[in-house]
Length: 637
Image 1 (spheres, rainbow, N blue to C red):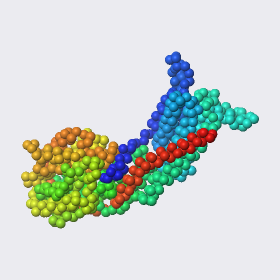
Image 2 (image 1 turned 180 degrees about the horizontal axis):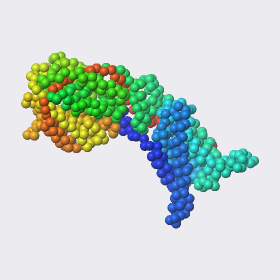
Image 3 (image 1 turned 90 degrees about the vertical axis):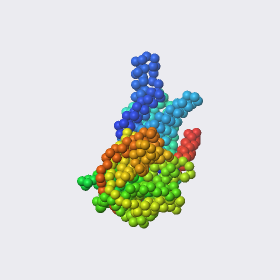
Image 4 (image 1 turned 180 degrees about the vertical axis):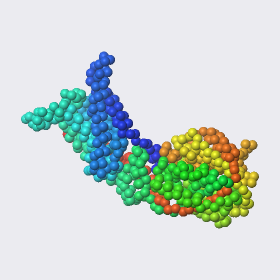
């Protein structure tokens, strides 16, 4: 991937699952209680029993004045938002309310610290509270507009619940209603005890004046305008270049990180383009007719990140195959990401169709290794078809473009081959270091090296003699996790024996490999007194499950390379011991799928990165401008 695309994939580090609503509310009440203990000083703590009583009272006051608005917002936001046509769930509303509470507590804590060192007093703390409540409103307004795609005025209704609830409690318990008395109370005397209760509140609230509520209203309007301006500025390039709104992207991303919804895929589907991709299947069948192993290679890219689109494609292949599945990486880049997980089913159906049409053969050649420039090609012929595995190791390489792979396959077929399963071994890269990111693009020297190597492999295979085939397999899901760069398929080995030659195909469920690791593994398998195979190659699936941690999480970066080598060598031994006579066959089906499309990935990535980088700067600028206006209003008031 390009560095820009990597930044997009790197957004996956923010992925988490929103806790259940009761978990969010429980934590919110705990935070409110702690804030109450820190904010209120209800009495003498000299006596242990009196201290416990007063601490409990302080905690309750924190829960009442800070926690209650959070609870009301958690339950009320979903109902109000759904009533006006929104899509907020209870889990999202609770998490949003908790975030608002954290904003309030952070502002109050900072103001209290400043007040202690400057002597500004309690009024300054409540001035900060006004800014905090307005900030909560602005933050909630942005999220509600993004998630529910409501207009500013409609989204302001559910977005204001937490701020309005806090303001109402402060209004009643600060006794602010007394400012409305003009020659006598406006309201009936029987209602006053319920609408003005300063005697039941902490004495600190007496510092609240009517002007605080007036300033809160003005500040909320200023901040709402800031949110509107921010969205208009950020949204404009998205609509001009991609024809979609940035709010659709934000909504999808929030839905995915919060609850694992497919809303982000719905957004990608708006960008998608139709493409026809070949799906090639190489199957090995035992003498009793059961399948022993299956290589499945559609010319798509298993991205963009996590389980979005085709990110979890390798595992889906493994669940579908009868024999041990091997889903290596195809010659395709991020432009060929599937836009939705539904497209994976389309590809798997095509793989099933290809499997059903396979004609098996017992005639197999020994494997060959050829090289042209930086490109190395391992090839083995099965009947009239061939398996080719390409690598640039020890040189760095990342994805091979779709057009290059098609050209290389066509070059190999000029020697008489029928179907070609061309694998990008994807086994040596230095991440995003240096100017050369390792892409194999049309017209580059590397692309012609690969095409030439494929042609050479085809010629040698066409001239090679045939013999019978034995195949052994082994796999280990391993104890390593995606956080350590290894996906759920672990490590899989297929060892072919033809004549006196043994070839080991090692597939690791990961996304590329640390530089030099592939060479050390291959050398350990093929050289020395303990050599286990004549020829070996190590491949990765390029699964993007491992990229929920960071964009670069290559095999060997987080695990012990020696332990990895020992595991692979053990599995090769097991595969050799598992060898039995098989027949092999290959077939290809073409299927129409929706992918990101040419240049769409780069455009989306660049726009998303602008939102993250420049959007943050723009948001900070607007926040500072809004606060400056707020300060001006405060001084004038």
